Amino acid sequence: MQGLPIEPIVSHPLVTDIAALARTVAAAPMSAVCLLDAEENWHAAVDGFEADQTPFVVAAAAVARSELFVIDASVTDDELVDDANVGRLGVSSAAVVPIASPDGDVIGCLCVLDSSRRTFSKSQLDDLGALTRQVERHVDRAVEQHHLRDLSVRLVESERVLSETLTRLEMSNRDLEHFAYHAAHELQAPLSAVAAFASLIDDALAGELDPKLLSMSARHVQTESTRLGARVASLFELSQFSNSELSHGAVLITPLLDDVAQWFDNTIGSIEVDCDADLSVFGDPIALHTLLTNLVSNAQRYRSPDRTLYVRIAARTNGDKVTIAVADNGIGIKTDDLDRIFEAFQRVDGSTPGAGVGLAMCRRIAERLGGTISVTSAVDEGSTFTVALPAG
Ligand code: ADP
View 1: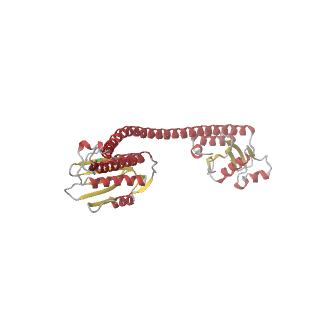
View 2: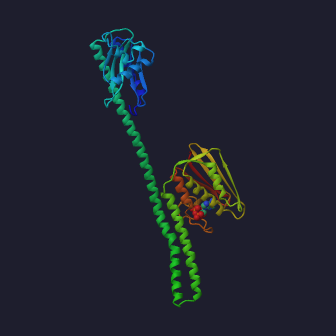
View 3: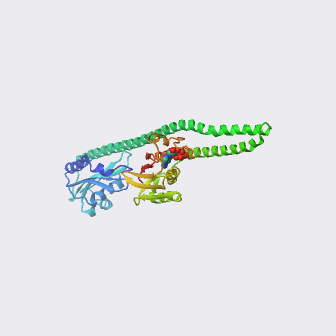
């Protein structure tokens, strides 16, 4: 029967009791309740003999015939005996009652077997019929429970998906508010500059200003437009990792980290990769690469002028997670600033150019892959950014 675990149904005490009762009511030495599962394997509760092929052959005959059949002293039809394949197995008499599924398909039988040639009375056959209805009711209940369990599993899964979607929506909403405010703020400054310099160009062209100002203003318009373009590009990159589909597959860590280390500028320091062998995380290789190269790029940009840069990437298994820690000996970050650096457009060190969206993007990627990102830092000693992701 489709999707229904027949073995637990057959091994239920009720069914084993029914097999024993069948033997008693029919005064037969052997009885069996046989059911056929979705893969067409037979499962039987037997009483009075060691399980062998006999009950299954009888059950197969019951399924083929779809109706009660009896082989006993009154049956002289050798063809029937042969047809049921029963004679060959040393069983001389059998009463076989088909068991129907809730859909009406025959899925097995209740049978009593005897090695001697005998007859079964009508009341014995009626009692066997009543016991069979009991087995059918048991199967009915099991089917209902199975469907209910199936439904509740699907319900739990839908709730999980819903709650994940809600969390994502809340995150998106929170980020969107932040994003809109800061994006407007970030774009406003270069835009105002472009407008002001354009107006100067206008004045210069009208002869009201020193023509020297014309080329200076044009240069500024160019610079500010480039800055504007860079900010729009970083906004675009952030939005890309916020909304685009991410794949969720096993990604091997060693080649990923080796590739990230390739991006390191060896002229300004050294990088070391330390990774347990065969470690993998569950995630999107491109997004993971973007996340880690951002952290390495920050380590380079926020290096200390007083010492040679040293970056160490270490990957370890931690329960069902893998942690990847990117540590540097750079300028460090003040404790008060640690929380806000993961927000979009929050910059702490203004002396180094940047749009302030790199860590926001790293956090977004980590969260979307079911992970987290955190930081520990000490001013003028260095910082360690740790990404924890589901192990692959
Ligand atoms: P950006 O680097 O463009 O400013 P990020 O989001 O990558 O944007 O970083 C936010 C801020 O966090 C930076 O302005 C910098 O002050 C601080 N920061 C990030 N990484 C490091 C690091 N490895 N060491 C010191 N400060 C860092």
